[in-house]
Length: 98
Image (cartoon, rainbow, N blue to C red; front, side):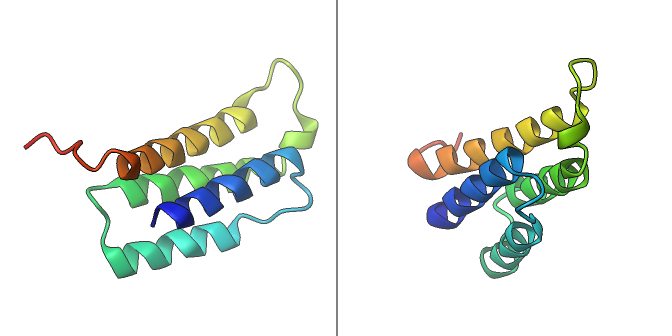
């Protein structure tokens, strides 16, 4: 699962750097498949799917962004943070509060 999350993170980075060259549909499908196969691990995968979907919708606006409109960048930032937190949860398997 950690490898899949790392792959999604790399695709998100590419989509941010080159918004016209990368489509986030594949990443969304990978996360949906992981959710179906492994369960949701709380709401982590749902949160990633939601934030990645928002980034996908903002992707077309990245090239048109000026300094006053940071919304598309913020959407990518939120998706990136969600994926980073998920990866971190696999780095520290003893992070369960119980």
